[in-house]
Length: 230
Ligand code: BTN
Image (cartoon, rainbow, N blue to C red; front, side, top):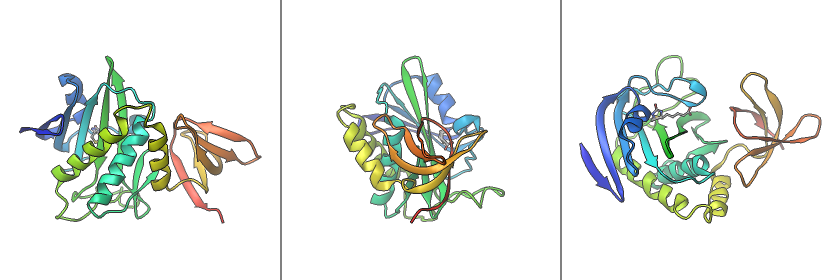
């Protein structure tokens, strides 16, 4: 099914390998590819993203070059969820957290001058065995996926249109919803570096006071929250 949501053309599929792949075939700016299930959903760092039937899995094709795009996307998702009565948080850079577990994730892939912004939210879908300790799905039949998508697109536009002028707004909103600053964290993929997450830089980097005292900036990686600092 194809329909309009604000300035976007939304194309819905029952099942795809990945909305990212379909979007890269279509390559049409301001188009949103949605699938009710993905057979081969992709996460960050080359990981698999489990996308069973029912969740909200979509890719927005943009020609926007905002450096804070993925942070803005995290803000757009939590603000949209808030409008639907769900209070979620953001773990740097853009994991959507609910009740301490991962509710959603965001990936941005660039190719041919376009950005493919992929967003996955566990909404009324089953969480596969083996992921239940770390992932969560919102169980609320009153949350209509199309309505949540429309809110996300609306929030995304208000943050990304006229970027970089919206940078301050993005950072301010991100700080309002984040769940990492002031906490003991370990960050990295292979080698973990631990310290206290102090702040976010204007370029979106996470500033960590590492054990030993230095301030270190991180541009990518998974954050593991260890405990609150009093
Ligand atoms: C992450 O690792 O946290 C990012 C997950 C991104 C998943 C979404 S679901 C829609 C889009 N299609 C994909 O294959 N991945 C993204």
